Image 1 (cartoon, rainbow, N blue to C red):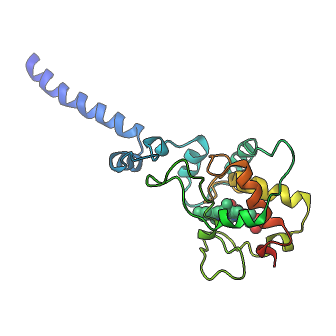
Image 2: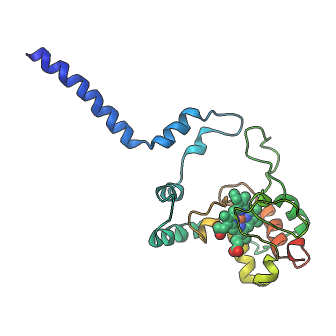
Image 3: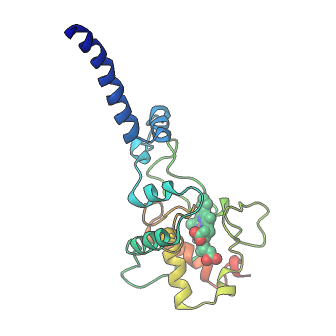
Length: 201
Ligand code: HEC
């Protein structure tokens, strides 16, 4: 009799443990962990979500208004404005950064500066024949929004950390996640905000 109880209890204990395990880890994450192989600079830590990403993953369709506010105010604290207050660099260098998609892939040399890949999601200039449309067109951004300090600061903050203005945005957090350097962001902001830039012509 004792033996029988043991035989029944043991498999149940295993099922219980497996259930607790499955509850802890998101199945989609488990699949990614099993299939994602570390190569070059692309390490497994890329699968670790920060609190904002984890929150956004909970609402794949629509983020409730109160959660949006929470994410945006938390992320606003992560926007770093330049210590010297200089928000604008050289739009010509900014254009090169915006039109370059290289960087952060396993096959990229980590010593080479990354591009901003902006063209993959945004229209930037009239002369472009090909651009992505995941994000809104940025053609005439400065001209339409005004060449003011307020809009310059917004452009900087937006590139540094888009989540600060639009919770759960699909746009990469270029400054916050160290994809672009402060100097590169200065050039990209000039591309958006310099009246001489092709964005505003
Ligand atoms: C993966 C796609 C993607 C990439 C790459 C991307 N963006 Fe965005 N961007 C978006 C989306 C989507 C939005 C709209 C949602 C939002 O505001 O976050 C947006 C919004 C913006 C806005 C706000 C526009 C407005 O009318 O207020 C600016 C400015 C901007 N992006 C600049 C850039 C710049 C500069 C780069 C390159 C350094 C870039 N984006 C790269 C997807 C992207």
